[in-house]
Length: 223
Length: 223
DNA sequence: ATTTTTTTTTAGATCAGTCTAAATCTTATT
DNA sequence: AATAAGATTTAGACTGATCTAAAAAAAAAT
Ligand SMILES: [Mn+2]
Ligand SMILES: [Mn+2]
Ligand SMILES: [Mn+2]
Ligand SMILES: [Mn+2]
Image 1: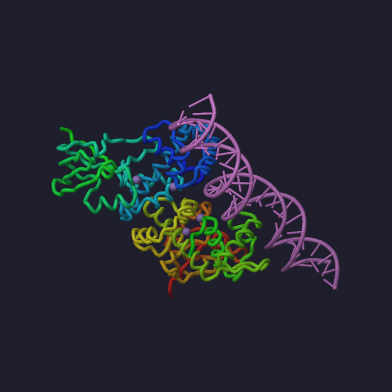
Image 2: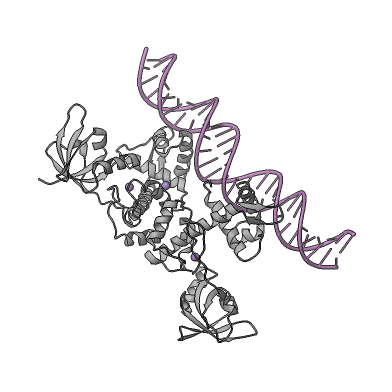
């Protein structure tokens, strides 16, 4: 409940994102790599976070979030994504330019500010990358999703999110005409390397590698 | 030119504001008092700021800003005031609630963000307290001003700014109906204590102490 | 011109956050 | 099961920011 430092918030968020991938424990090195620091620094921080009961931490055996840590992480993510919407919707930033800015703005922690911002933006449910925005209570409204790389030839869906928010990736998507909300049909899948030929909005044909399609989330069209 | 920490930015801003009052040197204690820290901490920070050539500092003899420090302070103030406008104009905060929020937001230093925000807000020239917003180059558009306590009986002016942004003061102004842009006529000035009777917008009579009127800036109506 | 008071600086601690290098624990391999 | 490899933690150091208490300098008062 007490105020956290930006560094503590960044670590919590990183742990949350790593846990999101499935495992119920994350390792020191995974955190270090995601947060671009060194294992020794992570060990240090884990002690502090455990002290504050934000994580479960057993030396040498990885960490997970406590209920309180989980809730806190969702608050941070909420702020991050609301600011991302603000930057894109109001200040006309491109979705590949907002990462570092939202990374800073997320640490301004004022419940009133967040509520007002949310209201001002019209209570958005998803950020510019298609990721869900937790509500005040940490609830996520999630759409049923499937990764594009797992969509079979002939199937049609809508692009709802990306798994990778690096500028390089997002710029690439812009270039080939892939965007959130686009209709996508998988015309062909190459068995050898998993690359696909797509039809975007029934108009544009695009070839993408599996590395790309594995980072795109799709909602399948019913039927 | 290099990136400053939030603390360094706060000190620079404090020095700027103290110099604004007139003197060409400010003392360690004045800074400590404004920034709510101790003289020893200020001494420490002054060494660092001098090292970075943001201030002129001669031990025991006060500080002033270098050209670079002055420019930097204006950039910080620009960010602070733009965010204040955003909070009031867009998020509907009251002018007495924005201080601490802007105090944090001002440290997000991205020239592009600031430019976009400025544009989005319609290039405002003054913040909610009536203080001028420096442009990208640090230029201030200042209105000719005089403190209300120095306006003589019979004279009429418009309230353009406040010298004190504490919630207590601003709430008081709200209560008695004084706001930026209001027309004000000084009906009477008590010689004994400098208190005044005012007529706001030609309608409402208000008595204010000199402590209050010394914190209100007025633009005199020509003629 | 001394002495006293006030202001400012320094000395020495502490805390958060980070790093490198060394020690230690876990896991995989022989 | 012993050893090698890999991951993690600890030890020790550094920076930035802050504080209290003591020392030093400047300003004010006698
Ligand atoms: Mn961050
Ligand atoms: Mn996002
Ligand atoms: Mn500030
Ligand atoms: Mn202001």
